[in-house]
Length: 241
Image (cartoon, rainbow, N blue to C red; front, top):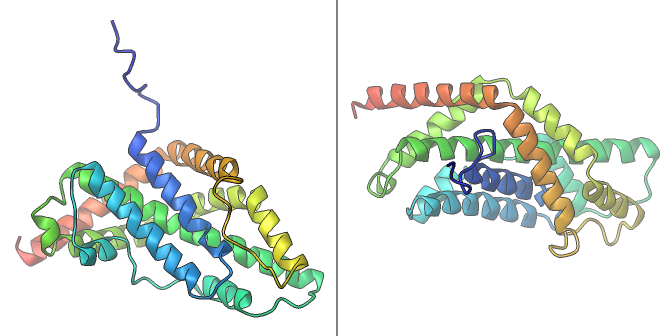
């Protein structure tokens, strides 16, 4: 008799649900209206995502290794910096064309951050499953090698299919639309941090939709894994380890 508690072969693995949740959380940080606080929140989300994955494997890394694996030193896109700047100044009454540009930039920022966190989180999960990081190697140079391989792999693969799916998700987000409307109609108040209790259903909806897209693109992520392994092995050969 089959184990009733076993997971169906086509079900999304629980660790990937956490990857998707943190990716959505990172993608929502542009809603924070305070300059630099949104970047700080992004770093916190991504570093917590790393800690959660390590904890799942019973591992704990030095803060320096966590920051490295989280990509805390990576700069945001030009669009992201522009959106952050616009939030830092008073949003005076604007023309329709400017409202459209502002919302497009905002969606792009959300998509970029979600995609970045999703790709890095997925490959970190793969690295941990492979045993590329353990209690000993986390104290040494392995985090840098793993992160370099992750970054190189992400650069090689065309992420447009994933980003287009994310763009559809965020453009239809009631939460994002509500915050954009609030920012433009009430400039003094501007966007805000989503209320955890009142809007948890919408955040969960975004996560569920992202999971569906993620699972339908298994071939893409399998290819991503291959690029990661190739770069990691190449780095190990160069260093002679």
